[in-house]
Length: 269
Image 1 (tube, rainbow, N blue to C red):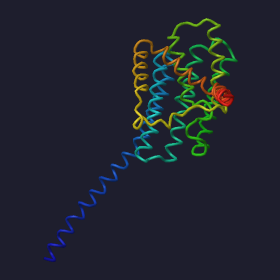
Image 2: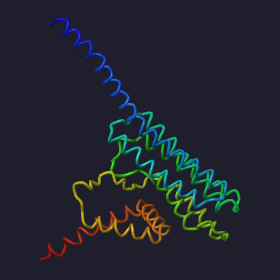
Image 3: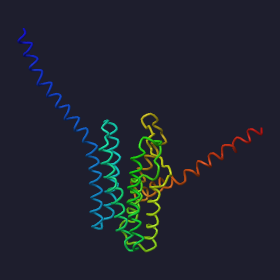
Image 4: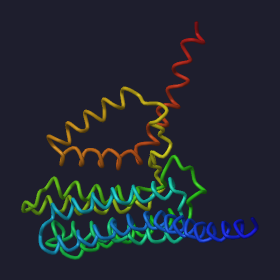
Protein backbone atom coordinates (compact mmCIF):
# COMPACT_ATOMS: atom_id res chain seq x y z
CA UNK A 1 0.00 0.00 0.00
CA UNK A 2 2.82 2.35 0.82
CA UNK A 3 4.49 1.70 -2.53
CA UNK A 4 1.27 2.46 -4.39
CA UNK A 5 0.88 5.68 -2.44
CA UNK A 6 4.41 6.78 -3.27
CA UNK A 7 3.93 5.78 -6.89
CA UNK A 8 0.72 7.85 -7.08
CA UNK A 9 2.41 10.87 -5.59
CA UNK A 10 5.26 10.49 -8.06
CA UNK A 11 2.85 10.44 -10.99
CA UNK A 12 0.95 13.48 -9.80
CA UNK A 13 4.15 15.48 -9.33
CA UNK A 14 5.06 15.84 -13.04
CA UNK A 15 1.41 16.52 -13.91
CA UNK A 16 1.25 19.27 -11.36
CA UNK A 17 4.47 20.83 -12.64
CA UNK A 18 3.19 20.56 -16.21
CA UNK A 19 -0.06 22.25 -15.20
CA UNK A 20 1.87 25.04 -13.48
CA UNK A 21 4.01 25.52 -16.60
CA UNK A 22 0.89 25.78 -18.77
CA UNK A 23 -0.62 28.35 -16.40
CA UNK A 24 2.61 30.34 -16.45
CA UNK A 25 2.68 30.32 -20.25
CA UNK A 26 -0.94 31.47 -20.35
CA UNK A 27 -0.16 34.32 -17.94
CA UNK A 28 2.79 35.38 -20.09
CA UNK A 29 0.53 35.42 -23.15
CA UNK A 30 -1.99 37.61 -21.31
CA UNK A 31 0.77 39.99 -20.23
CA UNK A 32 2.03 40.23 -23.82
CA UNK A 33 -1.37 41.05 -25.33
CA UNK A 34 -1.47 44.78 -24.35
CA UNK A 35 2.13 45.20 -25.55
CA UNK A 36 1.25 43.57 -28.87
CA UNK A 37 -1.60 46.05 -29.32
CA UNK A 38 0.76 48.91 -28.48
CA UNK A 39 3.20 47.53 -31.05
CA UNK A 40 0.36 47.57 -33.59
CA UNK A 41 -0.25 51.20 -32.67
CA UNK A 42 3.41 52.01 -33.27
CA UNK A 43 3.42 50.10 -36.56
CA UNK A 44 0.42 52.09 -37.82
CA UNK A 45 2.21 55.32 -36.97
CA UNK A 46 5.31 54.19 -38.84
CA UNK A 47 3.16 53.09 -41.77
CA UNK A 48 1.53 56.53 -41.84
CA UNK A 49 4.98 58.09 -42.17
CA UNK A 50 5.88 55.82 -45.10
CA UNK A 51 2.56 56.48 -46.86
CA UNK A 52 3.05 60.22 -46.39
CA UNK A 53 6.44 60.12 -48.12
CA UNK A 54 4.69 58.42 -51.06
CA UNK A 55 2.03 61.13 -51.22
CA UNK A 56 -0.76 58.72 -50.17
CA UNK A 57 -2.24 61.08 -47.60
CA UNK A 58 -5.70 59.52 -47.37
CA UNK A 59 -4.25 56.10 -46.60
CA UNK A 60 -1.86 57.67 -44.10
CA UNK A 61 -4.81 59.29 -42.30
CA UNK A 62 -6.59 55.93 -42.18
CA UNK A 63 -3.46 54.39 -40.62
CA UNK A 64 -3.57 57.05 -37.89
CA UNK A 65 -7.21 56.21 -37.15
CA UNK A 66 -6.35 52.50 -36.94
CA UNK A 67 -3.59 53.44 -34.48
CA UNK A 68 -6.25 55.22 -32.39
CA UNK A 69 -8.28 52.01 -32.22
CA UNK A 70 -5.17 50.07 -31.15
CA UNK A 71 -4.44 52.69 -28.51
CA UNK A 72 -7.94 52.39 -27.04
CA UNK A 73 -7.80 48.60 -27.01
CA UNK A 74 -4.42 48.18 -25.31
CA UNK A 75 -5.47 50.19 -22.26
CA UNK A 76 -8.83 48.43 -21.95
CA UNK A 77 -7.26 44.99 -22.34
CA UNK A 78 -4.60 45.80 -19.74
CA UNK A 79 -7.24 46.90 -17.23
CA UNK A 80 -9.57 43.95 -17.92
CA UNK A 81 -6.77 41.39 -17.57
CA UNK A 82 -5.14 43.29 -14.66
CA UNK A 83 -1.82 43.41 -16.48
CA UNK A 84 -1.17 47.13 -16.19
CA UNK A 85 2.55 47.75 -15.65
CA UNK A 86 4.84 50.75 -15.64
CA UNK A 87 6.62 49.29 -18.66
CA UNK A 88 3.32 49.23 -20.57
CA UNK A 89 2.58 52.84 -19.61
CA UNK A 90 5.96 54.05 -20.87
CA UNK A 91 5.81 51.93 -24.02
CA UNK A 92 2.33 53.25 -24.79
CA UNK A 93 3.50 56.86 -24.41
CA UNK A 94 6.46 56.32 -26.74
CA UNK A 95 4.18 54.74 -29.36
CA UNK A 96 1.72 57.64 -29.02
CA UNK A 97 4.47 60.18 -29.67
CA UNK A 98 5.13 58.53 -33.04
CA UNK A 99 1.57 57.67 -34.07
CA UNK A 100 -0.22 60.79 -32.79
CA UNK A 101 2.61 63.31 -32.70
CA UNK A 102 5.24 62.80 -35.38
CA UNK A 103 3.06 61.06 -38.01
CA UNK A 104 0.18 63.62 -38.07
CA UNK A 105 2.61 66.56 -37.96
CA UNK A 106 4.64 65.19 -40.88
CA UNK A 107 1.44 64.34 -42.75
CA UNK A 108 -0.11 67.81 -42.45
CA UNK A 109 3.25 69.45 -43.22
CA UNK A 110 3.78 67.41 -46.40
CA UNK A 111 0.19 67.88 -47.56
CA UNK A 112 -0.45 71.57 -46.83
CA UNK A 113 2.24 73.43 -44.89
CA UNK A 114 5.42 72.88 -46.90
CA UNK A 115 4.80 75.74 -49.40
CA UNK A 116 4.29 78.27 -46.58
CA UNK A 117 7.89 78.34 -45.42
CA UNK A 118 9.43 78.47 -41.95
CA UNK A 119 6.31 79.45 -40.04
CA UNK A 120 4.57 76.33 -41.30
CA UNK A 121 7.21 73.78 -40.34
CA UNK A 122 7.53 75.50 -36.96
CA UNK A 123 3.82 74.87 -36.53
CA UNK A 124 4.33 71.18 -37.35
CA UNK A 125 7.16 70.96 -34.81
CA UNK A 126 5.00 72.75 -32.24
CA UNK A 127 2.41 70.01 -32.72
CA UNK A 128 5.04 67.35 -31.93
CA UNK A 129 6.50 69.06 -28.86
CA UNK A 130 3.09 69.95 -27.41
CA UNK A 131 1.95 66.37 -27.93
CA UNK A 132 5.03 65.05 -26.10
CA UNK A 133 4.48 67.50 -23.24
CA UNK A 134 0.82 66.49 -23.07
CA UNK A 135 1.76 62.82 -22.72
CA UNK A 136 4.38 63.58 -20.07
CA UNK A 137 1.88 65.60 -18.05
CA UNK A 138 -0.72 62.84 -18.36
CA UNK A 139 1.72 60.23 -17.01
CA UNK A 140 2.72 62.43 -14.09
CA UNK A 141 -0.82 63.31 -13.01
CA UNK A 142 -2.43 59.89 -13.60
CA UNK A 143 -4.37 58.91 -10.50
CA UNK A 144 -4.23 62.45 -9.06
CA UNK A 145 -6.70 64.40 -11.19
CA UNK A 146 -10.42 63.74 -11.70
CA UNK A 147 -10.61 60.72 -14.01
CA UNK A 148 -13.82 62.06 -15.58
CA UNK A 149 -11.81 64.74 -17.39
CA UNK A 150 -8.56 65.17 -19.28
CA UNK A 151 -6.54 68.32 -18.61
CA UNK A 152 -5.74 69.60 -22.08
CA UNK A 153 -6.75 68.14 -25.43
CA UNK A 154 -5.66 64.45 -25.58
CA UNK A 155 -3.07 63.79 -28.24
CA UNK A 156 -5.15 61.07 -29.99
CA UNK A 157 -7.98 63.61 -30.40
CA UNK A 158 -5.51 66.13 -31.82
CA UNK A 159 -4.24 63.51 -34.27
CA UNK A 160 -7.85 62.65 -35.15
CA UNK A 161 -8.52 66.31 -35.93
CA UNK A 162 -5.55 66.39 -38.30
CA UNK A 163 -6.53 63.07 -39.87
CA UNK A 164 -10.12 64.20 -40.43
CA UNK A 165 -8.90 67.34 -42.22
CA UNK A 166 -6.65 65.22 -44.44
CA UNK A 167 -9.59 62.94 -45.29
CA UNK A 168 -11.79 65.95 -45.96
CA UNK A 169 -9.26 67.49 -48.36
CA UNK A 170 -8.81 64.14 -50.08
CA UNK A 171 -5.38 64.81 -51.56
CA UNK A 172 -6.56 67.76 -53.67
CA UNK A 173 -4.21 70.63 -54.40
CA UNK A 174 -4.78 73.41 -51.88
CA UNK A 175 -4.82 77.12 -52.50
CA UNK A 176 -2.61 79.32 -50.38
CA UNK A 177 -5.44 80.62 -48.19
CA UNK A 178 -6.55 77.05 -47.46
CA UNK A 179 -3.02 76.03 -46.48
CA UNK A 180 -2.74 79.13 -44.28
CA UNK A 181 -6.01 78.22 -42.57
CA UNK A 182 -4.72 74.71 -41.88
CA UNK A 183 -1.50 76.22 -40.49
CA UNK A 184 -3.46 78.40 -38.05
CA UNK A 185 -5.53 75.38 -37.07
CA UNK A 186 -2.34 73.40 -36.40
CA UNK A 187 -1.11 76.11 -34.02
CA UNK A 188 -4.46 76.18 -32.20
CA UNK A 189 -4.67 72.39 -31.81
CA UNK A 190 -1.08 72.32 -30.53
CA UNK A 191 -1.76 74.94 -27.88
CA UNK A 192 -4.97 73.21 -26.79
CA UNK A 193 -2.95 70.09 -25.97
CA UNK A 194 -0.90 71.96 -23.34
CA UNK A 195 -3.81 74.11 -22.15
CA UNK A 196 -5.66 73.66 -18.85
CA UNK A 197 -9.07 73.22 -20.47
CA UNK A 198 -10.87 70.13 -19.25
CA UNK A 199 -12.12 67.57 -21.76
CA UNK A 200 -14.54 64.78 -20.99
CA UNK A 201 -12.71 61.43 -20.76
CA UNK A 202 -15.82 59.20 -21.23
CA UNK A 203 -14.43 56.85 -18.56
CA UNK A 204 -17.49 57.12 -16.32
CA UNK A 205 -20.01 55.93 -18.91
CA UNK A 206 -21.48 52.56 -17.92
CA UNK A 207 -23.40 51.26 -20.93
CA UNK A 208 -23.98 47.87 -19.34
CA UNK A 209 -26.12 49.38 -16.56
CA UNK A 210 -28.01 52.17 -18.28
CA UNK A 211 -28.61 51.01 -21.85
CA UNK A 212 -30.48 54.16 -22.89
CA UNK A 213 -32.65 54.01 -25.98
CA UNK A 214 -31.51 57.51 -26.97
CA UNK A 215 -27.90 56.38 -27.08
CA UNK A 216 -28.84 53.48 -29.34
CA UNK A 217 -30.56 55.86 -31.73
CA UNK A 218 -27.51 58.10 -31.76
CA UNK A 219 -25.29 55.14 -32.58
CA UNK A 220 -27.57 54.12 -35.45
CA UNK A 221 -27.60 57.70 -36.74
CA UNK A 222 -23.81 57.88 -36.50
CA UNK A 223 -23.45 54.64 -38.47
CA UNK A 224 -25.72 56.00 -41.19
CA UNK A 225 -23.73 59.23 -41.40
CA UNK A 226 -20.43 57.36 -41.50
CA UNK A 227 -21.75 55.14 -44.28
CA UNK A 228 -22.78 58.15 -46.39
CA UNK A 229 -20.33 60.94 -45.54
CA UNK A 230 -17.51 59.58 -43.33
CA UNK A 231 -15.17 62.53 -43.94
CA UNK A 232 -17.66 65.13 -42.77
CA UNK A 233 -18.77 63.03 -39.83
CA UNK A 234 -15.22 62.55 -38.53
CA UNK A 235 -14.42 66.22 -39.03
CA UNK A 236 -17.57 67.33 -37.18
CA UNK A 237 -16.97 64.80 -34.39
CA UNK A 238 -13.41 65.85 -33.65
CA UNK A 239 -14.16 69.54 -34.14
CA UNK A 240 -17.01 69.33 -31.61
CA UNK A 241 -14.77 67.57 -29.09
CA UNK A 242 -11.98 70.10 -29.69
CA UNK A 243 -14.34 73.02 -29.01
CA UNK A 244 -15.92 71.36 -25.97
CA UNK A 245 -12.92 72.22 -23.80
CA UNK A 246 -12.76 76.02 -24.37
CA UNK A 247 -16.56 76.39 -24.36
CA UNK A 248 -17.16 74.29 -21.24
CA UNK A 249 -16.59 77.20 -18.78
CA UNK A 250 -19.08 79.32 -20.71
CA UNK A 251 -21.80 76.68 -20.43
CA UNK A 252 -20.97 76.16 -16.75
CA UNK A 253 -21.32 79.90 -16.02
CA UNK A 254 -24.55 80.03 -17.98
CA UNK A 255 -26.02 77.22 -15.89
CA UNK A 256 -24.93 78.92 -12.68
CA UNK A 257 -26.45 82.18 -13.89
CA UNK A 258 -29.77 80.58 -14.82
CA UNK A 259 -30.24 79.02 -11.40
CA UNK A 260 -31.10 82.18 -9.42
CA UNK A 261 -33.18 83.56 -12.31
CA UNK A 262 -35.36 80.47 -12.33
CA UNK A 263 -35.88 80.65 -8.59
CA UNK A 264 -36.69 84.37 -8.45
CA UNK A 265 -40.28 84.20 -9.83
CA UNK A 266 -41.15 81.37 -7.44
CA UNK A 267 -39.93 83.40 -4.48
CA UNK A 268 -41.97 86.40 -5.66
CA UNK A 269 -45.16 84.36 -5.63
